[in-house]
Amino acid sequence: MKTVISNKYVISGTFGDAFIAFCKLYKLRGEGFNDNIKLIHLSAHPEVRPFINKLFNLLDNVVIEEFIFVKSGKEVEEFINHSKLPSINSLAINNKSVVTDEIRDPEYLTMEPYPNINIEPRVVNNNFKIGIQLHSGKKGSNFKGFSLSWLEELLNLTNKNNCEIYLLGTGAGYSINKINSLCNSLNISNLIGKTDYEDWLSYIMSMNFFITGEGFSAFFAMSQKVKSLIFYSDYQIIGRIHPLWKKENIILSAGWETFEEKIKNKFCRHFLNRNQLLRPLKPSQVWSLIYTYYLSE
Image (cartoon, rainbow, N blue to C red):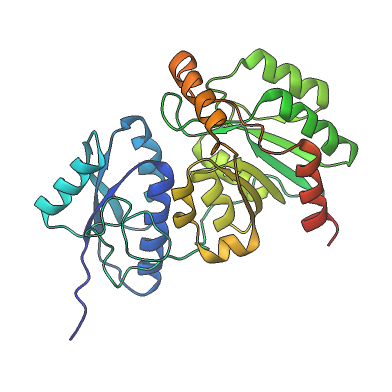
């Protein structure tokens, strides 16, 4: 019996979730399905919509037909069940959904871990280039950002070893003056708040090594075969990481599982509207990982 392939799907979540769906539709395109594809996007975060639109513009004839605001996973489940449309979940391999076991990808959808993105790398030279995504996620929600004091110690180590460093992000939740001062004092390429969407991706693609919290920037870097050190705070993120990505990159917990760290995060969310800043490993340990796995090859 011939498989009937749908040309309309429901996706949900934020930027990282959308990228997993992108990789699945990319593979569907590569398998010869060339019909126009329409998407309905459900999310509690309307601010991500312009970026998700731009992401799917990288695929031929895939458009987001409608954005719908939802408040919870339960509302996502109810919409999908009522619409009778197939959905695309944010898991890399199996078909169990992060929302409910009943909502699964169609069996013909699988993920392409290494999509060929039609964007040119921004920096091309023979220097060892390290990109650092200062923060990921949204303030007031799943914000994950590195401590500037931790970052300064790490940058001092990379400077001593003649690496070219690029700092990326919008700077939301930080003092821009402190970031500028740090980058100027250590001769770091400061791209905070200075890149548009495509520039951001092209810089990530240019790196030899990338350090980031979980989320879209991590998924994108790994998908473009940029060796990465990724810190996660939500264990569910592991299900979104393709086995080939796990094999080629270093993926570590942010260390927020203990009772003490959970209390710190609760305090920060209440008073600062964000999680505590990341100090996941000693900077010397981070440098040791970079050198051992990549520079010593």
